[in-house]
Structures are given as C-alpha cells and as structure tokens.
Image 1: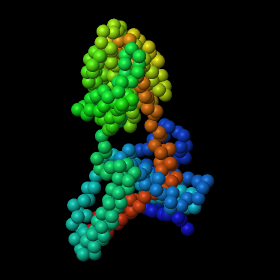
Image 2 (image 1 turned 180 degrees about the vertical axis):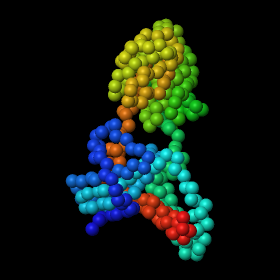
Image 3 (image 1 turned 90 degrees about the vertical axis):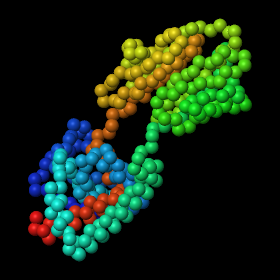
Image 4 (image 1 turned 180 degrees about the horizontal axis):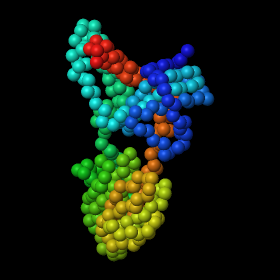
Length: 340
C-alpha cells in the first residue's frame, strides 16, 4: 500500500529513452512526458514532507511550463510523472464549459472545488510565509553594513563618532565599537563621517551593499596638520573562480589585482565567464596612504533542473497538488454534459 499517492498516472503508448540525471544537455519539448523512479536508502515518512513543501511550491516560479501528473510514495521508493506544457496552449473550450456547468449538480461540484481551492490557497500562503517570509511580493534585496571610524595615522578606532548613510545615523561605541546599519538596499551607498575636533573633515566613502551579506566600511580621520599621500592602493580579487577586473572600464588583468591610484572614486566591474553569473559592478573609494579591498563573487551555474526535481521528490510532497486533481474533474463533467 502506498504511503501517499496523488494525481493520475498517464499510460504511455510509446516509450522513449532513459535519461541520465547527470546529462546536462537533456531537454524537454512541449507535451513530452517524463517519469522518474527514485529509490531511498531510508524510510520515507509523512514527517519528511516538510522540507519539500517550500520547494514544490516554487516549481511554477522557476519552471512555468512544469505540469505535475502523478506522485506515489512507497516506504522506500518514489515515482513522479510530469510534462512540459505546450507552448501557446489556450483553453479554447472555456465558453462552452462555462455554459455547461449550469446544472445544480455541476454547480455543487464547482463550489466544492472552489472551497478546496480556497483551503489550498490559504495553506500555500501560510506555508510560503513560514518558509520564505513572504506570500506574494518578494522582499527587496537587502544587506547590512558595519561602519567604523579610525585614526589615519595609528589605525586606532575612534569612539563616539557619528556616521550617516541614507539618512540613518549612528554613533560608534565608547570604545570605538562599529555601528551596525541593518537592512540597507543592495547597491551603492555613501557613508559620511561627522567632522570632529583635531581631525580634517573625512572623505565620504562609497561602497556597495551586497544582498544577504555584511560589509565593513572604514571612515578614515586624518589628524589636523598631518601630511598624507595623495594616492592609495586598490586590491581586487574574485571568488570562487578568478575573473578579469576592470577599473573605470579598463582591464587590469585576471584577479587578484593590486593597483596604486589617486584619491577618489572608481568604478569596478568584472569579466564574463561562461557558465557563471558575473558579479555586480562596484565602486571603490581610494583614500591616500590606505588600501581598499574588494571581492567579486561569481555565482556558480544553476543546477540542472532534472537534479532539482529528483531532490524535491525525494523528500516529500505538499497537498497543493490536490488542485491539479480536483479542477480537471469539473472540466470533465462539463464536457460530458455538453457533449464537447
């Protein structure tokens, strides 16, 4: 007896070819049907379903053409059947179906399905909110910044210094502790330190906030009357692979790059590497006599969607699939009634 069985397994009159999950060139055409068998080395229980809920609900987001047909969970095995929706498919019979469900029996089915759909929608909303933190509109990409004030001559941190970014102000701690600016929108921001006695007005620093990361911003304070160089050093590296680095549009070669530059702001960008997502452009503020460091993060290529699907089905399934079972029943009943 199956632990869980949902949907309708469509019989296939003509068998195709076996697909190696490691085949990154594999592709599906519109209307193609694929069936996956998965063997687990551990017992599958209802408790395993929770981690899958988030992923199964994201299928349509990443793969709009994905159509789930059938899923069956045994104690240690899983079967899933799915297809790709035909491109440009439309419901041309919609007007006739609408007219055909005018009988009380069909309306009862319709109301029942709508009630189930409402329950499923509420379940999806609660689940998405629990797992992702939002329901319909994704939150804006944000990151954090730690801002610190330092003596240019000694590198010592300075206490009770006000630093401002985007209208938000904070003050370093009594022992020079850094200020934490939380939930800044990802992108470039200008950090401004207040003028304090005994120091020249500090140079404003422009630095890019990275989504879900925490950057460190240093405001340098030069003691009044202290001569300082008019050039500084820029150190740029990339990870996890080494890419080409551009400063103001001019190539500086493959990372890591170490360049001496005049004081000021410089646009930093990165070369394209096939199969990787290029880091977003950045800005570096050069302060005389001090190094400025930047790291460009190349994102690894996205996983082959065959692998992701196996991973999702290996853990569990959400009851949202019930909608794909109930709604077609109305259309089937309407077709029988109207003879279309």
